[in-house]
Length: 141
View 1 (cartoon, rainbow, N blue to C red):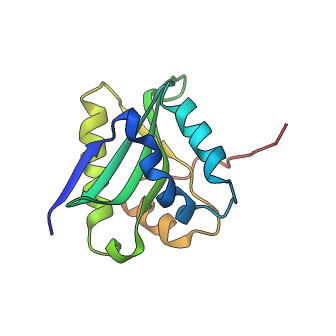
View 2: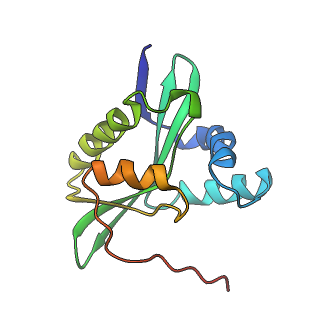
View 3: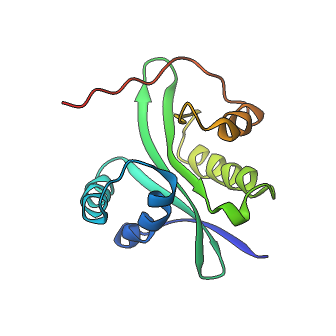
């Protein structure tokens, strides 16, 4: 199989919505997701994707910022690979591509959040060298 890793053009951001809907159980409507992603592409955000020929099979948001405790950083967000393509080393290849992409922009650290119940992702990220530094809290206002 021939996989292509690339940064999605902001004008195509809505292409990722079906994958995001598979990832999350937060029943956001397609309309809400379109609105949010339209806003996100105007902020410090890029979207990395994986294609298998013309089929979109993976996604990761990339949020850029400078943090007092890490310096120039990228936060990986909504990382998802279609189930049929998992456990084949593709996630490792994708992250390696992302690391090279963001290092070229001067980024020195990568961070991410993962759902507490998503045990397979915990093992994957541990194997990638990520460490748990704390808890992510959320309060709806």
